Image 1 (cartoon, rainbow, N blue to C red):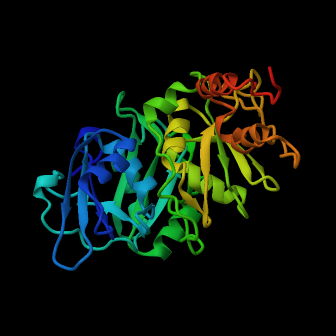
Image 2 (cartoon, one colour):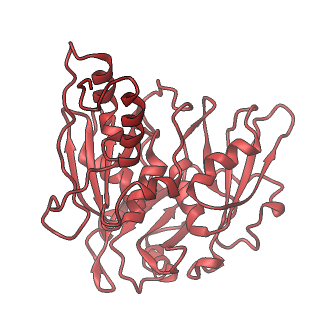
Length: 352
């Protein structure tokens, strides 16, 4: 199947290594954050761990879910997410999947960014196939406009082939632009020690409404012992990154994309996810009239959160603790003001 046409792209994901307590409603709630889901079917076979198939309405949503949900923790188990069929499969509907897809978790996925608008999925395949056997490939397109988002993914069966492709193609001209290549999947994280199952899941529409049309910046907290390369690899699957500001001593970063949709997708997908063994929190960066780099819109005020004072009253401590998460959300601030106002407090810590 040629993935050049968005509507013909794969839409169904295989989700394995599920806990026996997982239900179809839970799977729909988790994966529905990444786009409209047409159906979900859990397969239970004797004493084996259950697995399921999730069919999305749009291929772009399925691709985003694959990137965001693979290796996420669900009820204490790490989910294994992959395409339910190869691009050459004859059908991609949930009702046709009665057997699990062969394990392809060992395949090696590379990210290809800064693609020219005229680069198609077929062109992407033709450029990378000389490096070795390819198991999957696609240019990611906007589900509304059917236009390229400027990046894609290529999966190789052999790691050495993927590594060679990254090294030889990074910075090469394809069409009218020099492309960027890097690993799309992060290395396995350090031993997991935190339960993220209770992290509040975010909804795309709700998050999108929280920021102005010109805010393209994501705040990401909880980045302990990280670096800019890891941050770039984590966020680059969601779109073109214009700038990264990482405050290592504070453990957080600001990531500026070239459009609001990419930033919103990153917030929804990565909030509560595991990066280098740590659960991270994502929200909108504080918008500024001037950008960090002096370029186009979507700037951010890169101001570290105020340090917590030992003698601060409980309301002040709560405000400072949650500040990185809610300080950029006017709707949340209004709610907090109304709540504390009935007790005689203001958000600045003073009493009425």
